[in-house]
Length: 278
Image (cartoon, rainbow, N blue to C red; front, side, top):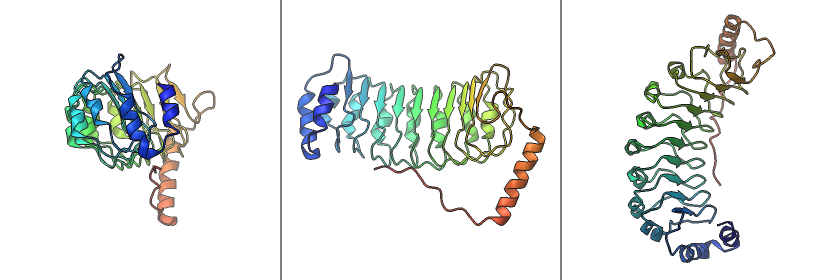
């Protein structure tokens, strides 16, 4: 538990691997192994002998690969690989067909493999703070997905196929490069939470027809209007509550005129800064 992790923090990296291996000799009673924050460069293969394991936390290490033996953990439901050094998702992860929650945030991923579509039990996917310039279309094949965290990437648009995800309830897109509100979201009335905070959206269309919507976060955008929403829906952003919002037709004309003016007068922007990993 916490005591073990505290001791490990003081062990040199070259000895840490052996220490963790000695500590994990038997299958934990709670069917969970937490090796987070242990400076691991290699996954301890003997953990794969715990075939009844349900939860495996490998967050905040130095991993960039996983052994094929991981595929023996066919009962795994939660896998945390966030805050590591993965440049590509290891194919073996796509063989863990009972996974419900997959944490991949804060890595160096530019894409996701098509084999991810094999994870048809996946309900929650975290891919925030990676190097994604577009949302991988394979995400649209995860038919039971309920929550998608894709913030702090370099996304400029979303694929139209996203509307296939009829179970999706929450989508987090803060800190991307969106200049328009993603049109596909207007065709997803089952969404309950939409977060587009910290983007570059200048105009918001009406969201009043999204009958399941409960919360929309749109703060820190250069917009001239707040999205219209149905009664009872909470908005977080400018003009969200008491302050009257400007006429949306004028706001849209202003946004379009400003965009054309900036494109005509300003020099090209430098490439966006992508998330970095230490």
